Image (tube, rainbow, N blue to C red; front, side, top):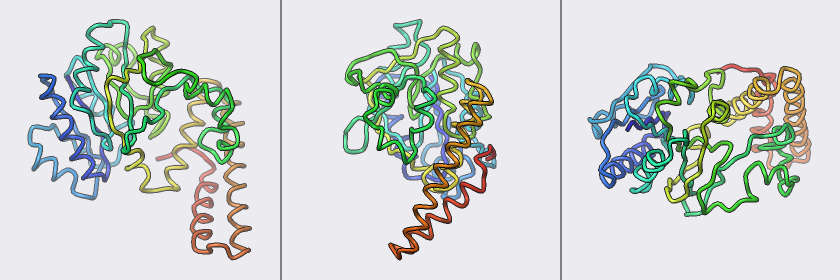
Length: 309
């Protein structure tokens, strides 16, 4: 078994993640390798791994390859029959690795299995998904989402019409913790590096399903997810990456016209948000916050929502 963790400037969380993986290996009697790809962190992450976890394979590409490029680098080094891809801001329950290995060992048609993701307070994080429609792409993670949160289309996208406490097949799973078979890489390939970060796991799992594999959510395995610890450090860049990756996904699966429509729509939404913040600034409402947000939206709009790391 191989575990791959791509990390960027989350040293303390990475330590907790590695300690939890070690405990999971010990409880299940698993043998294998743990691979950390450090994306040029500036917080001493690599030094801590070398010092405290000398058995871990540390890969330092010398640049930030993104989530996708970092994981692909790890996948090229991985030797295990089963490969667990983890975010560094996760902690696996001691029995989780063994449970996930057991699922793939018993069910040969399952290509990908993922655990229940828990928030730090113990509540379940939404991690099950159907493939998104264009409507979902236009409203999900935008200022419009709160207004349509009860829409059957949006609820269906997150499988809120199905219980989250029983194993079930899904279209795809949030990529914070995924276990895959090595055959997946041999048959389908690795993650598409057109996605620097975000939507890469959706695209990959869509290709995996198209190749005939099933994808399962397995809530008996549990992983705590401190969501967004790495990506949240640079807010404007995160929004640009999220929007451009979303557009790239729709271009790849629905065509250039759909992608152009989505790009224009999202740009208008960001422009509307900037207008709202500007009006609030004129009213002298929390002026420092308004200036910060206006600068943020300027960066997003200036990008044209075009791809680029």
